[in-house]
Image 1 (tube, one colour):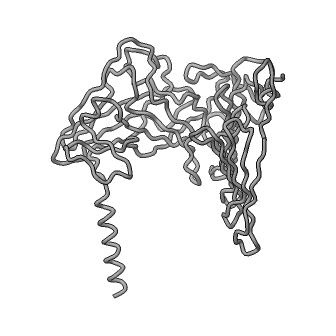
Image 2: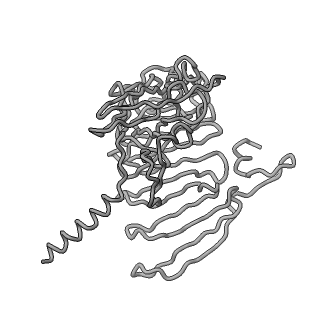
Image 3: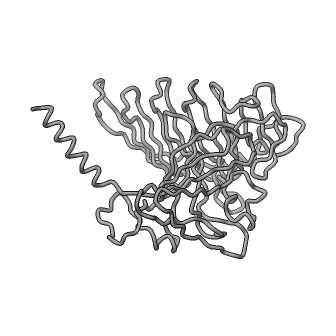
Length: 384
């Protein structure tokens, strides 16, 4: 009797789940033309669009000659770690091809089970702005992809493109009723492909070009330094944009070290466990407060620290007691870091919350230079 009730309950909830599923007859599958690439090498992605319906023809919007406006396809690069889903880079949504002709998207009708392949290119910077190649080469993360393994997927999002609105209804998780107008359903933030591994090996060359930028590679015998200038000695100042310990022809090793600094954008630091999972990831800037995103784990891969800049530009951080997983401290800081509200959680020996202690701090003091208030941290960085 008990097993029967469990089965009935399972079928009940399964039917509800199935009823809430949206039918997406058209799928998008991402692949590459090679198993691995070297730094700076042109990367070819294939987006295979399939009408999986066995009976009906369905339309799909494709880029065609579009040269301005928002992209239909944009790539996302995640870290290779398995202990976290860490988005490292994502493409700018808008096209900036420096051409006068706007071009257009177009609708292609796929017959039942028909496929259509759209190629797009990364690191094809010679054709990045080219009108002749349309927009297939106009893909970039805004920063170079240095050697390593990345998890890549592609987002297809026609939302906001007028022609797409003629064939799609856009929905979010809170929509209960959709118009009955025979249009295809698609999430308002786009339809996402499966994830694939992208392997980029480090070259043995002493000079590499990545997305049109030239890097001079020097080594101290242990690590490799990517410099924007051909300096006689290794330096770690602003002319040094990347440091790695990956040997030539490799894209992954144990305890891999990774550091990058992109002037006026952000810097990244990664420390890993032997199995390539994240031990510590930091994305930070030269300004105070410096942290943009942080994840830190202990030896048992339990999260101990998390930081990020919120959408409203304030800063948030939280630390955890382990192995209990309870919150140790929580902080909200103003956009300039001059005022932070800190909440410390105090527990008894049983792990029960006893009280919260709230305080205010001012980690980013400001000084006035030439009549302008500036972060004291930035002043030190600039040597003022």
